[in-house]
Amino acid sequence: MILMGAIIEFLLIRYCENHNIEPEPFNNRKSNGFANYVEAAIKNDIFGEKMRWKLVQSHLREFRNYIHIQKEVMSIEIDEKWYETIKPHFEVLYKHFKS
Image (cartoon, rainbow, N blue to C red; front, side, top):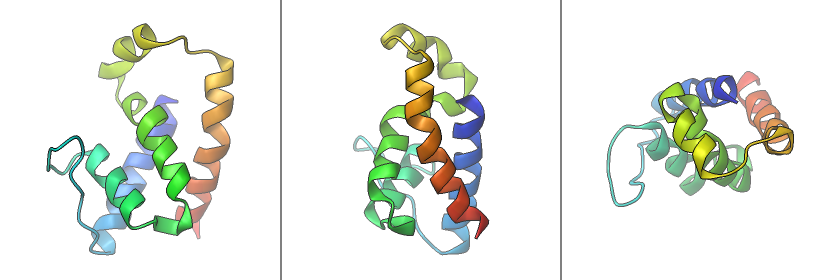
């Protein structure tokens, strides 16, 4: 899940920069962080995958960086079902970047 988050972060930021899509405020904060780019993906419905981007924001974003792992592990039970929920959404988004 760390790898999926890191890959999506890299590809999304590069995609937004190449397509002049500005990051959007997230939790009333404007910055150039991953959360802000995911908000831009949601707002701009990048690839027509708004719901998948919402899932990235709520379930995958914090995993991109090992610093947040302890927080995530303590917040809810993470098991194989969590991974199985996220993986197909990651694969669809990843395929969009490849085309």
